Image (cartoon, rainbow, N blue to C red):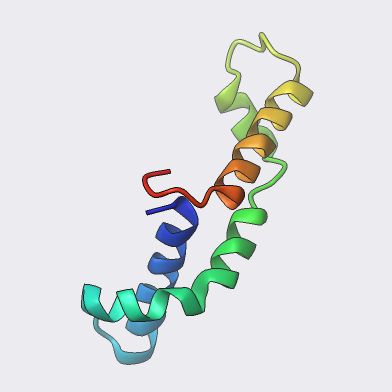
Length: 88
């Protein structure tokens, strides 16, 4: 399962809880998650350019320039969005 699918499944699961008040079965999630894929992609894309507190957590010693850390973070987001392989 890709991270994009994992996020889409979580969104689909929560949407069912919000509408019906109880969690769906995994079988239901299997049928519904693709309808949440665009929302999952948008949520992951919103994580680009981390806030200062995240930069500090990723680079507590200040060893790396913040631009390097932001680039690494954004590369990770790009990898999540472009990954189509199971287990990634």
